[in-house]
Image (cartoon, rainbow, N blue to C red; front, side, top):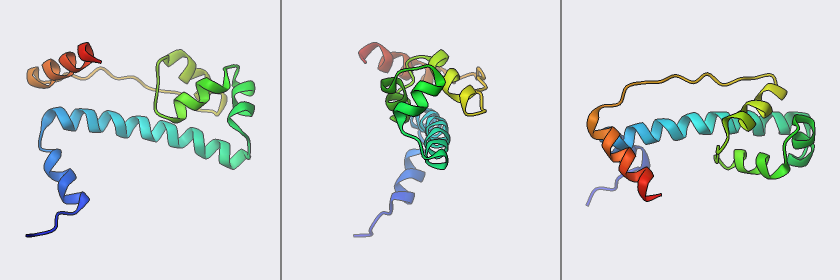
Length: 108
């Protein structure tokens, strides 16, 4: 039996349009999270210190660093503080992917 690498498995999963959309969303979130964590490491500050400087709670920083973006306004506040911003772009989804995402959101 041939061993399957993580990379091979990912390439196979990315053939599914639904999985690909969700994966790309997670990749975007990861890049935002990485920038915030990198900023904190570079400045040698805690989540609490960044929160105080940005005018949000430490819990918000923690959630953002865990990829939980419940408020774009809060995320934007933090990003502005570290000299960044977000660009939001509406992109069309194919019908199958759209239905799967809507169904998943209803059950969440």
